[in-house]
Length: 317
Image (cartoon, rainbow, N blue to C red; front, side, top):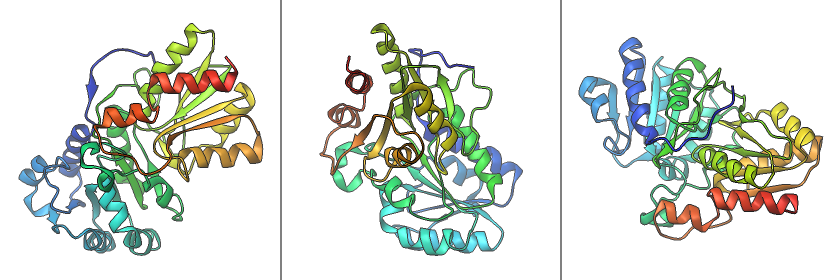
């Protein structure tokens, strides 16, 4: 099924994340939450109230937080580590690599409010390097749900996965893009949201809704854009990328992250080795300034107009 672009309400995925975690914890006593004095910002207040003995707040000690989670996983628990994304990956990268991924522990690392969601707090709070850092870690699954339904499905999957996971949980409100999908989330598989023959837009997380909007604008110009929701960054759906290159002849990637080492880099590596075609990688090229999330996304062309303009340039239109 192909999703229809709508102007429906937008949603904060952290809310459905928290609700789903509580529902799962009622059924599975192994589930615990570990946080760094971020009970409120991680939407864990209701979880703490219902399961006071299953929330471990280590304080502002992110390296310790991940180490504690690794120990809990070694003891048979399924810890969900909830922390602002810039501090989870920036401060505890060694523990993510050595304590969690190297040992293959079933820890679900939840990067809350990723990208430029904390825009007004400036570059120290932007989490735009996380995909680049984490893609280099062996056997660490990286997922970025695009909307509430996909967030719910990804959390449910993560409980059953049995291996290390990093999940971005967005704060910036997004529209629903999963309506009509036969399968909301399948690990390692892209979701085809819109057919197209002229080029493909591969987007992830909060950029997916914007990609669909851009495809609507491009259609008015006679450019038929395929849209893929790449909710799994690692491992990437190579078959979908190769098919897009061969069938549409051009690819644009869109991510709320650094252009070096993230989704665009992963896609380009597959394209250049299997089906070389023209590409544009849309993202953030370096340190981002201070400003609202909406300002920053517009500043870097991560909006419907910027995506459409890149497509027109790629097609020579």
